[in-house]
Every structure is written in structure tokens, then in C-alpha cells.
Figure 1 (cartoon, rainbow, N blue to C red):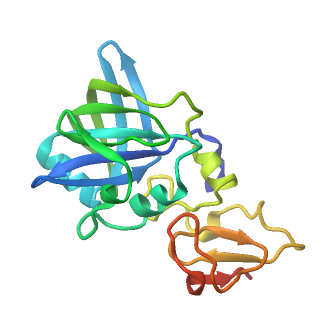
Figure 2 (figure 1 turned 45 degrees about the horizontal axis):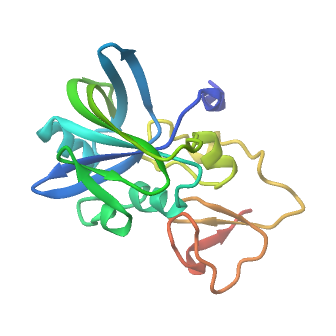
Figure 3 (figure 1 turned 90 degrees about the horizontal axis):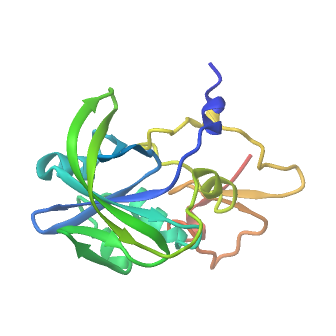
Length: 215
């Protein structure tokens, strides 16, 4: 089965937030969809081993911050490639607690405050159906799509993402014979061109020593 066909499905980029023991926790997801408008209902997919998922299971509620094309790529690096078990991800970015849940404030399209209705086990992931209890307006800007993340920011999906495809199933359309490429071993970001000693990954903030040459 050609897994690359799945890349033609459309996705967005979101930060899911929750609270556990008065701590803000959160992670990146790319699978969130509106199911109905009346009552307002959405569905998201989360890896069962994700720390944020366990917090949502306990509390029965979560927030969704909708990322825009202007969102700092390091938001994705922090929320997508580190764990809330030992990292306060929200502290690095402008945020606030609204209706008891953390939401990002800067360069986002808005946020949703959600209450869990049901959880369906799908093997590695769970699909969470939730009612939307409140909305928070953001900036009037284009939302970041998963395609934008891949083609413009040149990021990769974390292994816990529901749309993750192993390296052998990925397209090599961005690779060219004329350009030398380096891959960040932390987040998968691809740098085209010269790798300098002081280079910093724009997605996860890793230094030049974390990059390897793409063969």
C-alpha cells in the first residue's frame, strides 16, 4: 500500500493544552476536525502514550490553539519534540489560562475550549470526541496547514503523530541533486545549503552538531 497517498488529505497544526496538578501540559497534533456545528462538536486524535493524553483522560477537558502561518516554528519544536512530563512547554511562549485551560496567545487564529464526550481506542491512538464549550478569538491570519509545515517550514512529523510515515515511505520531492541538504536529528527539519557552526534549527532550536548530511 502506498502510504504517500495519505499526504493528499488535508490537515492543520494545533497545540492541545490541558492541566494536571495545576501544571500546564500540551502537545502538537495535526488531526482535528469539526463534526457538527449544532451542537458544536469536534474530534481529535492523540497517541495513547502521550503525556497530554493521560492528563486529558483524568480531567475530561482540553484546549486547542489553532496555529497560523506566522506562528514561531519553535512552538512546533517545543510542543512536538519534548515531553510535558519534564518540560513546561507553555512557559516559553505568550499564553494564558482561559476557562481553566492553557491557550497560546501570539500568532494564532484562535482557540477552542473542549469537554470530552467519548474516547475510542484505535490501537496506537485514541479518537476523542468533544463538545466545544467556548471559543477564543485570535488574529485574522491564515491557519498553518500540515502541507505548509512540510513544504515551507520543512518540518517532519513526530513519531507519535497519527499521520507519521516512516522514512522509507516519505516522498523525496524536496531533494535535489544541486543542493546539499542537512537533516536535524532532533525534529527532522531539512536545511538546504551550507551548515555553519553557529546554525540553530528554526524548529527545535538544536545546534549545528545535531545535523547530519542527507545522503
